[in-house]
Length: 250
Image 1 (cartoon, rainbow, N blue to C red):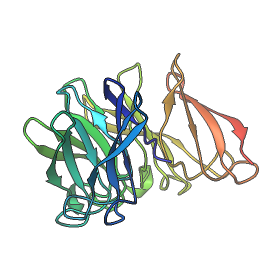
Image 2: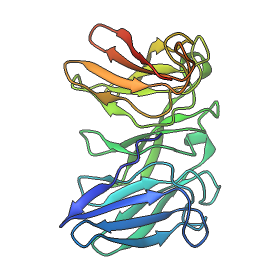
Image 3: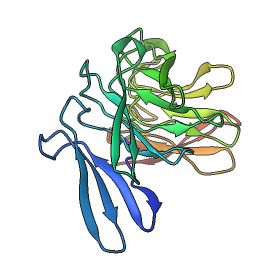
């Protein structure tokens, strides 16, 4: 649901995470070698070093992997960590706190300035999610946007950077119909704009992320709503601000 992917690093090696399992059943960070078809558990999450990662790893421009966990850390609100796959070194970088955004379910994305952006399911001023920035050079994480009921709350997936330079995402709740929204984020001006309110007819409770289909069109899914209340597949043209329900799931 949260677009968790393997990250390829070199020589057929991939890295990923599981939310559960491992020595304390709180998730692991693993390596998969395609050439030898070998799976290796590199780290078990135990709580103090984070727990229950809901998203994936991201390879930053400095060559290291960064990730987040939903739980664990000093406040049990999750952590931000760094993993050097060459030395197999895991470093907890940040203990997330409620005020600045906590309990992330998604994965980082890198902005053009090298800073990492992500969404959190909880925390922020309203306790219903935040858009955060992490600077791995200074080891500082900053809340950029608070999610609030009127314009969407509870984002579970990742931000998508479109060809117009703006970022787009989904929330599972909030908005005019209380069924979630599709939003746009302008990083340059730190401006959040609700672009669409989900309704029972066009799909509700959109977990996960959008994908870029090219030509200004984004695609996504909702988990509920539509003709069969089983979710929909939809497109959104950000150039014309046009939403189209493509398929009623059943």
